[in-house]
Amino acid sequence: MVGSLATAPHPKGFLEEVEEPEALRQAYRNLIHWPLLSLARVMGPHLLATMAGFLWAIDLAHRLGGFPTGLQGMLYLLPWYPLNAALHAIIEYLVGASQSQRLLAYLRERFGDAVVVDTHLRIPFVFKVLGVLLALGLLPLMQVAVLVYFRLESTHLPGLVIWGLCSGLILLVAGGILLTREVARPLQAVLEGMQAIRCGEGQVRVSAVAWDELADLTQGFNQLAQALEAERRQNLELYRDTVQTLAAAIDARDPYTRGHSQRVGAYAQLIAQKLGWDSQKAYRLYITGLLHDIGKIGVPESILQKADKLDDQERKLVESHPLIGYEIARQSRALAAHLPGIRNHHERLDGRGYPDGLSGGAIPLEARILAVADVWDALTSHRPYRGALKPLEVYQRLLCEPLDQEAVQALGALWREGTLDALLEDAQQEVSPKLENYLEPLGSTYMPKTE
Image 1 (cartoon, one colour):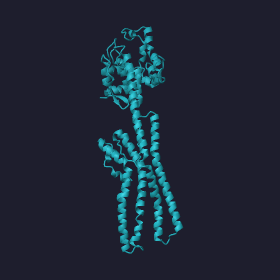
Image 2 (cartoon, one colour; image 1 turned 90 degrees about the vertical axis):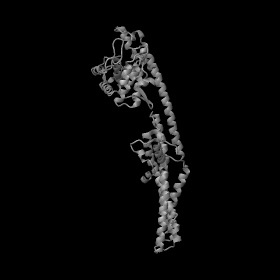
Image 3 (cartoon, one colour; image 1 turned 90 degrees about the horizontal axis):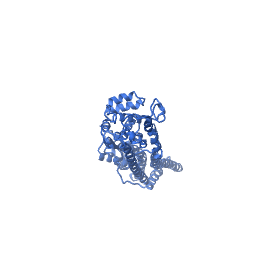
Image 4 (cartoon, one colour; image 1 turned 45 degrees about the vertical axis):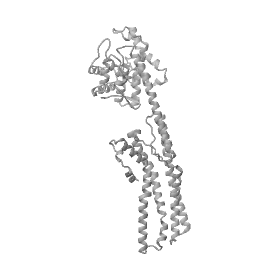
């Protein structure tokens, strides 16, 4: 069975180096046909070579007196050879299908839908069933018929019939099990794919190999999965644009904080990824960053733009914005995941933050990361009461603040790598920077550039 891999003209498609798209598609196409290529190999050169060798052998044996019957009688053995080859081919076909599924999944995982081609290959399931029954059922009966024809001395007709029926039954059961597994494999793959979609996983594809009516099922599932991904991506973009517009409207109330929410979200996303968060969870934190100051809509502009020191009443109004934002956001079930970050991004590890006075691990992790991103952007941006501070000075100050130090160190590593340069440059501009200046699309998430 392994030898049938030689039929693939592009074995490098399974190696680490990336092949050209057309070469990968050809490897995919040949992989789809792998069991059929194996079938053709067994029923073709193997069978012909065996039969040719058989004819030569019996002719030589007859000339040397090695057989008690004539050449014509020996030719009755010929039908046994294609049946035996068919048995070999069917078993290799059924077993090869499961192996090709693994390689197909590997190609899909590495290269996605770019390698997928429609082979337009269909073998009706009824033909498969008939082929298994004929090849596996007739072979033992043919052997019994040959033995009876030659009237071997040890021949006992009832025993031969029993032997033929038992061996035929065993082969039929084995073939039925293999055939059932081939049917169950794509069905199980579709069920697993449905479960993955239900759990919110992205890029779900079924890689089960099928050449019968089940191929339409797997292909239809993959097309449905693609359509759902496109719709999800469109909804995500609409959701992001809506939140981004809302954040920009809030930041625009103060010319010194324009773009602040976008940058805080981008900083928080980068920190989360540096800490090992998956892209989807980190992107959700980016959305929280966009919304973290939504409560400022309830704070008068005169206070937000005041250059002098705030009095106690004004400070209380400013410090109420996390609660105001929390009350606004909790009206929408879609924003439930963002509520901890909106409410607690001004909490501090020593318990001196607001509005709840939480301390240490009681502060949600997303809020601790947002706090670091919020302070970093505030200090590296211009304010009416001071100019922007240098990143080194800000980082040293954050190391001494009651903030999550793992998040601070992750931010420092990002800054030293140069990942934050575009964000820091945008923070110096008077106008609100466009998000596209420092974010680039990657699938259904938005990853900060590292150039």
